[in-house]
Length: 459
Image (cartoon, rainbow, N blue to C red; front, side, top):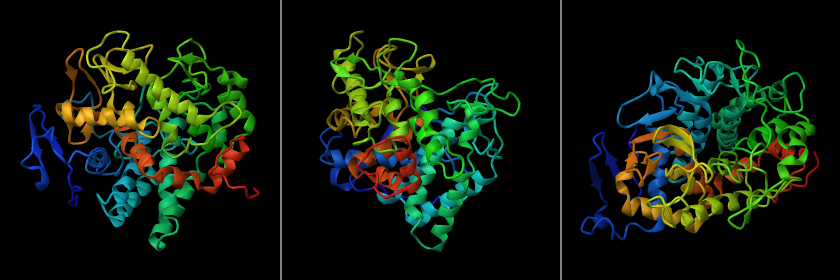
């Protein structure tokens, strides 16, 4: 791997498996203490966390495919054969993170192009099921089961991957001949996904999974609000296998039931987060995954206002942690944000109604566009006061000050949104790239969305 030059004033924290730290400081700050260093301006901190999390997908990539490993455990302890398992959805986030590397000059455009050519070549030959990739792949390109019956196409993970591919396509499509060839290959992959087939013989809802061995036995129709809005938008936007508007309205929108919001911590949730319970809000990744490319600013449809939805979602988590009804140690203005992540006993979907005292850094950091000041408070807290919780690829996946618990481990789906959403906060890069796609715009218009970024040209 070619050398990547760190941006000025960035401090790299190298944390080994034994938890011991070494700190390499820039020349400007060698004589100053860690906490007082003038290098720790907000801009330098943003550079630092973007660099470290980008590197998960650059230096930490699975070498055969160039795609993202599902997880990287700095302690070297892995379940089963998981070390080199490739995550397709997390790789979609990683594709975008690599563009952060280009824009912030961590790597060159040429280096990124080479990596993307490697990735696209791998994806062309990897297992697909009616055009959809599985949740997990092996370096051989063969599917490996996420769970027993989940050994076929995963349409939600595919949507996250396609969202990333389309932003890469937008970045390179007007470039030189080689870059245009990459863009064309991405177009072919996008057109090969049979979104409409995943309506299970024409039902008015999209199904998450299909397996050649188990068919539709996973039986997961995706309806009601969660992280998968991007799947329905891409399915409507598909130039080759589109869904009808009614699939969105009846499936995702649950015949309008999705619009039945509630109020929590004085803020309207805008949509109904849980169709079958009274839980007010979901984990914060719901406000991130679909909006890495999809710009929620000014985005509205018959069901809701998506900027209000996501901003209030993040603020509710913030207010909940400041209120701290369970009196967990550390919770407050500096330390907040709950989402699905590693937890004290395995993995858990942390949220206000299911709070285990575990903070997941991706929750606050990836909410930077919605809650910039609150998210920066968390960023400063982590890098100035909790630097033992930061390693080679940025903040570790989760921690509990209440239980004095953390593991030096990372998950692609949690690290990926951090550099991307911070870049959207800083420059709007990915929102500009994705929303400029003419097919995406047609899909949004087809579903009745309004956005300042939708042009008024006729279909």
